[in-house]
Image 1 (cartoon, rainbow, N blue to C red):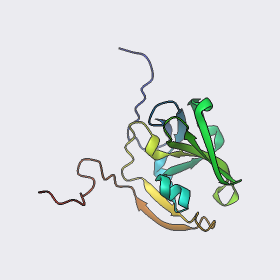
Image 2: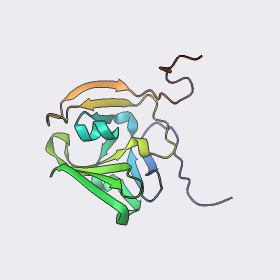
Image 3: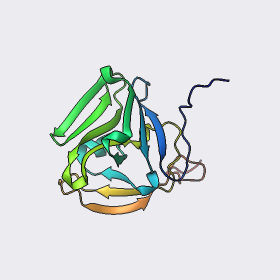
Image 4: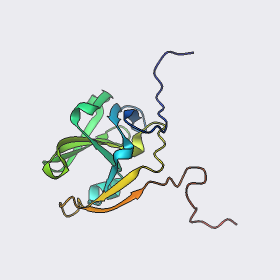
Length: 157
């Protein structure tokens, strides 16, 4: 049995360390946060088209473990940077400084977490499209892929 730390994280209430990666594994990170305190989805064109779902944290709560050399950077404006793997193209995290969001931040793409079950965590929908960052709605996350979680939009034959 290996003594190496697990790359899997599980659903646990409270503040903890989560591990994540891009699809090919070149970019790996750790982040400390409590998902029950809320996650965010932004309606700007970049976040909408990439399916980004994030959690905000202070820069000290984020650690890039590998992949610095393959990180691409997309910035729609100076205040925020979307970082992605140049090997597989997956947008893994972002960082910036937006006063309306509390200043300097990192945000991991929760879709990139390894093995985390985030069913039921609150999702705050924000208006980044119009740069107001106003809260548009809050709803608990329901995975369409979890056993019994979602309903298929396809009728069985």
